[in-house]
Image (cartoon, rainbow, N blue to C red; front, side, top):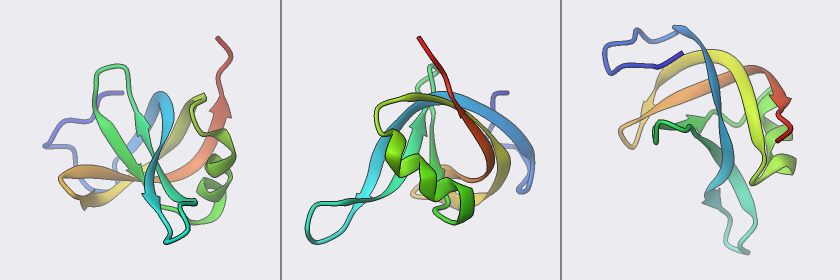
Length: 88
């Protein structure tokens, strides 16, 4: 599902894309990720619960189901409920 700028906060979405680093700690460790979708949109991932597991899947393709809970830095903030690593 594409998320437009008019999509309501808390809208359920399915996002497919590549897990890429978003934030790092002072020692250079990745502490937060975003999903870079094929349409060049980027979804910042709220790093709680299930989303913490995404740190193990940097540079892998995933499908994430969740909710848009707001925005940060002009990008949608995604609360991940479930995710799957996509092959190929």
